[in-house]
Image (cartoon, rainbow, N blue to C red; front, side, top):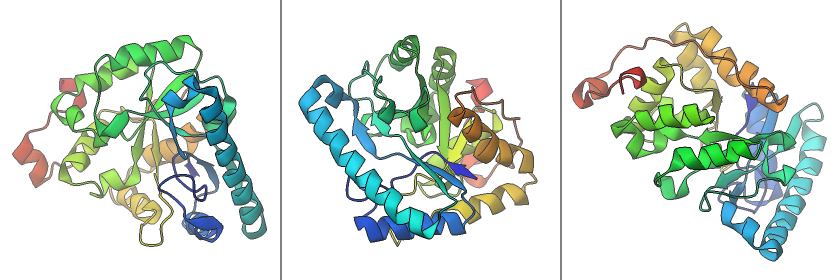
Length: 267
């Protein structure tokens, strides 16, 4: 497995606490079967408009990532560990030319909207990022309440050139029934490109890696799981567009029937 969304760099965001905490978190991911990681600490896009503050933040990230690399090299010398950022688009038109902002220095950049709320004109923001040569990989779209009411937003994002990353925990109910329902609908429609952990490296938090593998195995969705967790992450890190993920049919649960959510293709 390859994981493209986690918070393992020590003491830079709401993820790992200290080098020892980061080290333990990486070990948990490796033991669960993750063989390659690009970790993604939070970064506010608005910082790039203030060069002094931006460089200070990048220096902090550089120091933390170097400490992480040194610690992990002792424990897991065969682990491929890279870096990107989860860029919060509090500025919808940021300069993303610094390769440290992007996933492993590729043209793909993991992005999210502020405070899990979708501002107006997000397709235009995506299109502007694409015009600059970068490809937005939108983090956990299933967690935005607005998507449950309007799957057309996801369609507009994809038409504008974005890819989608879903959290393991969403399909397992980690963020509540509504996020789980939206996640299932997106998966059914073949609209998800990558599955990742969004692991925040705390001892009390699960990685959900074993659980998500079992979830797909129980539903005989091995091909989809391999594309979402191995093939497409590898393609992104090779600067190639993700492969299409086959649509799947999932049994509709009680929450689905109560809420009457549409499939993405019906939006």
